[in-house]
Length: 357
Image (cartoon, rainbow, N blue to C red; front, top):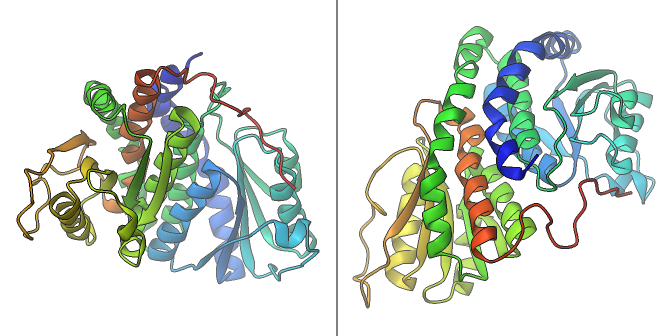
């Protein structure tokens, strides 16, 4: 099975998870309420770590729970024993085989914490270590670059946030629309291929997002590195203005994610500024048509390049937007890899499972 096939499987994967995973999520949420847990700790690596960044926002906003990333080497290399007894501790790993993630969950279990493994292998060491297991049931993901397991992890986290929210029924109704919205997001295929041809000569870029979609920018940048060998660096749009913006060359490449919500105008204004001041070439993943930038600023020295757009449907609230938003980015990375004469099925120097300690 090729990478493009796994990208196209995502609506079905998320639909199955929404149906089959609810009982586990409801049990974990009920126990978390019973224990009156006050925070969440997540151990993850790679794409799963980006899903954990999404969890920081969605669990913080919907459930009022602060989320800490576990920093596994604190346990595995330095022998630290962070106090996790009063936390919900999540281990997120598509393979469930990364020893450092497993060891964090084992330590949390020893302390009596409520633990949940989110994995695509219900027989993995991570699943064995945790008190509860949510099997993503995405089917074998043979492509090295994670796609369907990433959106499944986001969906699992969104399900947990919904179950812990003040109005679980309303949140679940919004969740049920995800498979159809991902299906529509896949129609960006032709736009992604065109954009890849236009930007095939870039060797580095910045990828900007903020809020819920900071996770999207991180994951998009990782796929650019893994597949196309691009020197992609992801930033929160707020952090980018605190220094890194000075490193953008005239005519440099900027990729950005903008979803409807309180941060949409900030992304538009930053895109407009970079186009006028740096003549940046911009690729924007967005759920709203809008003007190219939206903000006024100094007149460009030369005509600013047009903004290329990769759409995803505007039918979801912002808290769910990272699930379909990454899909046009995945398609773009696939076509960019091909446009650069590389094989997306065999990324340089990578294997499907990376074991870290």
